[in-house]
Image (cartoon, rainbow over all chains, first blue to last red):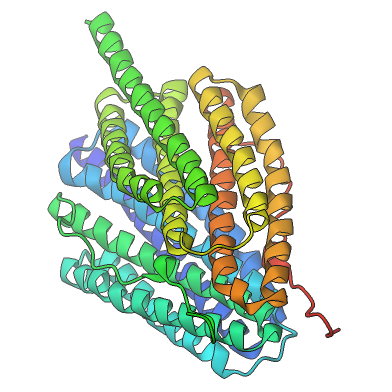
Length: 239
Length: 239
């Protein structure tokens, strides 16, 4: 009887893990496709990204429901309880990544007819590449309960924040140089902010992995280099 | 024995409710103060908003931990289980409201020395007033399990989205008129977006209240009027 319970409990955990793996794969593809759609000004690809988000929302609800029922039925303690709470948290973060990729895709649709020089997009594309690598690494780290790899992701987010702040300045400068850039660059600003926030969600997942494996929160404060909220750019000719 | 269990279970639920009420009070004040700091260009008040966010994060962790332990210990079913799951969700939304109010306050610090005409801030202030009313109403609806009031909040968010889209256009226009407005208006854009997203969190809470009371998700799709992701503004002299 005990064996039976343990085994069906394991089946429930496996189901949660495989659903989260599916969510992770969808979210990675959404971000990759949204970025490709930006670089190519491909509105059709962007629309496809928008459409797929619904599937991610449904999976998150499913994970949450199953997790709560498992807690209620099995009364897990210690590491088993952490495993399920972690599943809820990670599913929540991946769902938010999908929302942000979806909003990114919407903005790609908005600017798909604008023919600004490609170099303006270059910084955002580079930042997205870094974030995609973070996302892949942290999902692998979650699947393998690899705290060292999770910690590496957590520390690397610093670079993304710094890059975002420099993109923020750069875009403001383009806007000041030529008002025809304003609408385009404003969408790029929000789009870059979305991608930076996806980076933040990868650090959330890294923190969850640490909690899952060790039972303790990541004690130190994460290094923060996104100073864009505090950033202003002087206008040429002004002080 | 059963009475004892039921009664200590009720105590646990009451603790969750009172902690969420405390969180709601803090988040409301953060948004109100951040907006007042914006209107008055009061960097000191903005810094106070930034500082208080830590308390909100700690409360959210506390609610989550208590809720999960209660599920594991009491194995609640049906409405009791929904009550606890709802507490986790509402605490998560309020914590996000705090994050957004904190980011709003950071941007107020960034622009506190800029002396742009007050009318540019007027639209954002008006939107914040609406969102503050939404937040207050939905927290009251949660405390009283009032689905009618929750549904009212859920439907009213439409107006906030529409207002945000018009502010977005207005700010883009100011930026095009005079490049000296760009840095200031960019922060206002992000700041307005934060407040619009706080509105979204009030609708999440409304949906949670509906689920809590009825056991069913809010079936209909919420009316959406935030078209800003798709919005561009033509440049004067251009097509």
